[in-house]
Structures are given as structure tokens and as C-alpha cells.
Length: 453
Image (tube, rainbow, N blue to C red; front, side, top):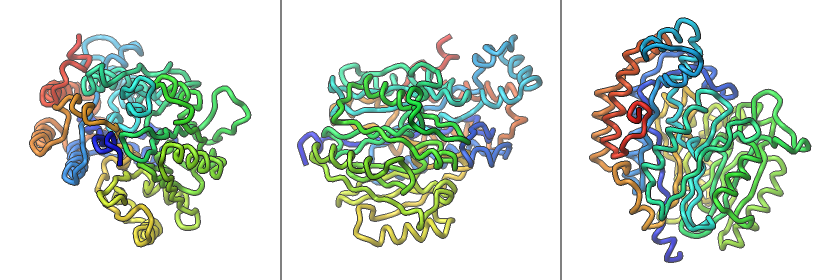
């Protein structure tokens, strides 16, 4: 291992579930989101489940950070649709006249931090800084309103311009649909060394020769991925582009992280994940070899796990974490254990001599019912020692912060939230009060619209 690699780590940045966590069924193409629409949620339990996963990874020795949630309901967004008056009047009028817009403006979907941005570590970029591009998420209105606040929060977490560069979201048009790290994986020998950034897209905006899904929208375009690579100063030698299989998107694989996950030299993926799979694996292997890495693809055959089982269990929406012995943990949701075919496959997998040695199961039911598993909840940021030292220390998970955040959740979160509760103007007051305190806990400064006005 090189000296730079010894001084580098991969930090997991998990989204803290917000006080308005609800099941609005807003995400067309996300089977879990649609099937659980209108079910009452438990924001307090959801936040505690996410915090428990963060603490568990911290206890395992991983660097762990917290991404603050968004201000919700987004009253400014509702005002753009013609609702006027006081904040309370805006909410009440929206509830009477356009409840779907109110539900969308209350979404806590920023908890799925994999969609917050695409991150390229300094070992890959032309200027030797860590680059962040906030995702525009323009495929869904309730997510498209996130990126301005996301950008401010990320800039408060990674503030030192000597080490970090931040880019605004791409233009919010369909040709540049960008869903962030949910469609981006970085493979490498060691985190501090140059790697290969693997961009996966669902369709091309400008190349009619490439097929596209017919039932569900392809949320990531090739052109968006290429633009992010240019913004980050990535070389051709360090980038591979691959298209999702359109038929798989039409089965509910709305992001690549529903069908594949990578870490270090390993790519764990379904047999049907990519078009022209053999060529893609060969290109990844070749470019990684040029970086001194040994590519280790782990392909799950459709005979063992169907796409339907993969989507239902979120087998691939998992975290691959490196162990000290060079093998890996696979962090999966409880739903994998509840699916006999998936669980049998996992027992066979860890019983072999491959790179994945152990499975860890987490209860993330509140997130899973809205369509987000372990991988959705985290953004990975590879950092060298000096870059880690430059991160805002207030967002780094510690035992004390874990206890403080649980107390904060218990003080401010409801334990039941239904669609009718979203019309209560007091919910906005509760959310702003909670977030104002949270920015002090995490030492973020003023990042929310209500703090900036």
C-alpha cells in the first residue's frame, strides 16, 4: 500500500431523516415508494434507525458524517405556484386546493444522500481537490427543490477551498437529468490513489441510437454524467460510462444502486444490470489494471436472484465496506433476510473464497418503505488525511454526537405522520425550530432559507 493510501479513508456521509418523513408515494418508477403511498409514517423511528446505522459503522472503525435534512414544507416552492399570504395561509390553501403539491413540498427525500451529489476525490481530479457537484434531481419535482440547500450544507461541511471545490447543479432540464452518486461508483486499489470512476446512465438525450426504457423514466442521462466528469477534471483514462439495461429500468431499477454496488476493486452487480456487460467489465478491468488495481467483479446470476427479488429486497442497495484483512462486509437491509432466495444466495456468497466475507443486516424499515436502503442513505467521500482534517468537525459522528442527536430527535420529531397532518402549519414551526437547533449542534452556520431571510 502506498503512503498516500495509508493516509486516506472513505467517509460515509449519511442523511439524517427529517421531521416531515412521510409516505407520499411520490416517486414513479420506485416500486416501494408507490406501493406504500398514504401509509402513516414514524419520523422519530426513521431518524433513530438511520442514526443507529451511522453509529454502527462508526463503531466498526469507519469515518462517519451527518448530512442535515431540508427545511420542510418548502413554503417558498408553494409560493411559486401562486399560493400567498402568511406561511400558515400558504400551507392551508395548498392543502385545500392542491394537496399533491403540499405533499411534495413536505418530502423528506433528502435523507437519501446518495442523490445529494457526485463526488470525485483529489487523486482523480486535475486540480488535486475533492470535487462536489450537487445533483439537480429534475426528474421529480419533490427532489428538484433540494439542490440549493444541499449545496449550502455541503459547502458548510467541506468548506476549505484549498481542498474542496463545489459546483452548482447542472441545468434542470431533461437532457441533463442528474441523480448524483446513486449512478456513480468509484473503483480503485486504495482510496488515496487514482481510481476509475464508473458513471451509469439510463438514456442518452442526444444519441437516438441508444435504447431507452418504455415504462419508467430513465433518470440519469449520459450527457449529465459526461458534464460532471468534465467539471471535476477527470481524465479519459479514469472514467468508464455504462448504460443500464432498459428492461431492468422498466422493472423498477430507477437507479444503478438498485442493481449494483462497488468498493475498492470489487463491483457487486446483477447479471442484467448493464447493456453490453462483457465489454463494460473488460473496460473496467483494463483501466483499473493501468491504475495498478485488480478488478474483482462479482456477478449475481439471474437464476439465483431475479431482478424482481433484487428490487424487492434491495440486495444491491447495500454498502460494501473494506475489512482489515482485505475482504469486505456487505451491509444489507432486513428485507434481504426475509427473502429466502436472496438470503440463500448470500449464504452461498459468503461461504466461498470471494472478496465478500460477511453480511451485516440493518433494520431500515421506515426508509425501505419509501424506497431507500443502506446505499441510498449514504454519500461516499474519499479523503486524504489533510482533507479529513479540513472537514467541519461538527458533522463527524462521535459517541457524544450520537447521543445528542437522539435527544434532539426525541425532543422535536413526531412518532406518527399521515397526509392530513401535513396541512398543520404547526409542523413547519416544529421543523424550523428543530433545524435551527441542529445547525448549532453540527456547527453549520446559516444554511436554511428561514435563517437567511
